[in-house]
Structure formats: C-alpha cells, structure tokens
Length: 303
Ligand code: NDP
Image 1: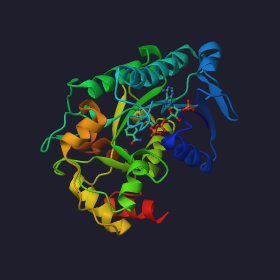
Image 2: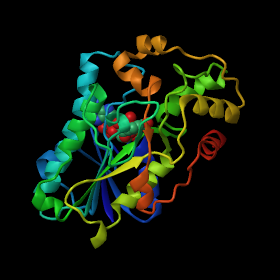
Image 3: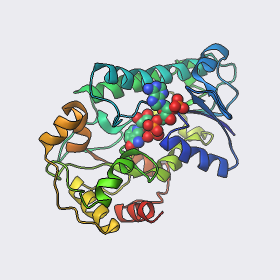
Image 4: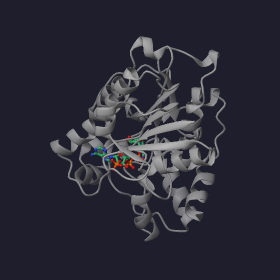
C-alpha cells in the first residue's frame, strides 16, 4: 500500500515509517521541508492528495519543547500546527477522486479530565475543560470527513498517552536527569501515568491502516485509546525506570516547581493524569509487544 504520513519525520513517524516499510508498504512524508521521499504542505494544498491507500497525521509542535517559553505564541503554534495540517489533509482526502480507504489522526488523552479514580474507555463522554482538552476537541473536529467521503474512507482517531522510546518524546528529556541519579517522582506521584511504547503506537496505527472489513466500517470515527493495558502511576513509572537504569530516584520534584518551570497549563500532563483503558484497541485484536512497564523500559534502556 501507499501511505501518506503528515509529520512522518518525527519521533512516532520514524518508527511508523520503519514498520510500514518492513511490511512492504511505500511511505511518503508530508513535511514543512522538501526532501527525498517528502512532499510539502503547500504541495498538498496546491496539487491535492497524492495517490495513497492510507493517510495519517502525526504533525504537531512539541508540547514539551525545551527551547520555547510557555506564552501565547507557543500556544498558537501548538494549535495551528495540529489543526491546520489535519484540516489540510482532511480537505485533500474529501476532494480526492480516489480517497484512501483509511484516515488516521493521532491526537491525545488530554481530552479526559485528570482524576485519581475515574477510568476512561473510548466510549467515555467528555467535554473540554482546559486548554489541552480544547486543543483535542478542535483537532479531532478538523479531521472529520464529509458524510459522502466517510462512507468510503474509514476514519480512526488514536489517543496516545506519553509515548515511550529512546529516540524522542518524554524519555529523551528524562534520560539525562535519571542517568545522573537526579530522577524523582513528579508532584504527589499518585497521579495516573498513561503511557505506550512507541513501537506499539506504530503497531496500532499500522493495524488501523489495514483495509477495513465490512464489519468494521462505520461513517463516524473509530476512537482507539493508544495506551498500554497496564495502569501505572507516576511513582511506579519513576521507580521502575530507576530500577531498570540502576539509578537512585530519591529527589521528588514538587508540583509548584513543575508549574513554575513549564507553566501550569502544560505541567498538568505531568503533575496530573488519567486512568485510560484501551478497551476498543484490545477488541480490534491488536497484540501489544510491550503491555507492561518492565518490558517496555527494559527494551528502551537496553537498546
Ligand atoms: P514530533 O514532536 O516528533 O513532531 C512531529 C512532526 O511535526 C515533526 O517531525 C515536524 O515535521 C512537525 N512539526 C513540528 N513542529 C511543527 C510546527 N510548529 N508546525 C508544523 N509542523 C511541525 O511528534 P511525535 O512524533 O512525538 O508525536 C506525533 C503526534 O502524536 C503529535 O501530534 C503529538 O502531539 C502526538 N502525541 C505525542 C505524544 C508523545 O509522547 N510523543 C503523546 C501524545 C500525543 P517537519 O519538521 O517534517 O515539518
């Protein structure tokens, strides 16, 4: 199959590209930069969707970009980088004479309100309650296809927790402090920490790109929680990472310090969390390679 990946140059996109190529598929990346195997967003806007059987959007300004202050311009970029690119792809799919059979958006679990007790499946009702949940609402809305196209193109929305892998995401930023023995629980440590190994997120996306069977077709988006089935909190994650790296984790970072450092609107993704259950993801038959923290962290640290 020919697969188009918006933001395919990033952390998740590189893992997905490796997986799809290993399965014999052809990948074209949509990027801000022209390059071999790439087309640009202006190419999609001016020439329309290139021929493809599947399309994915993974584009987005990094929420934890250490080089940027938390201010209005950064927040604007967080929204526009996700929403504008998603809309561009959805409109190109809708306008295509041969739309792909699958259209996958990767959004996030920030739509679910942080809680120490509530458990969220893909069917849980939610409404925006803060900046990041508003972002998810507008992002997923931008992906919706018109009814007549949705009859032929399956729409999938995957909501991942923190994506764990050696080459990017949260681990890339945690690696040095943990390696120096400066790792510690964040805030109370009791907050749920929904996570997924990058190779499983790539696997779930690839699974969603398979041609739909008549029993899976639906004209509304299929939502899949992109988290591991294990439910862990920040304390368990911190202690297990320290154990696997053979480093002490004795220095807790208080919540107020996280808020001061990151801005409270985004520190919530670390100081608070949600218990997210991948019920429908499991029902699709996807088999996790790393269903528990120990196997995931041993693979990442041992690499
Ligand atoms: P990356 O941070 O690696 O970014 C993906 C790509 O987005 C980049 O390679 C870049 O492509 C493009 N991009 C970055 N900034 C901008 C910008 N300001 N404007 C336009 N394009 C931009 O993302 P990940 O691979 O880590 O994540 C993929 C998706 O999954 C993202 O949408 C992210 O929000 C979501 N997600 C990720 C999680 C994680 O832990 N990593 C957790 C939950 C959700 P190029 O330079 O080629 O244009």
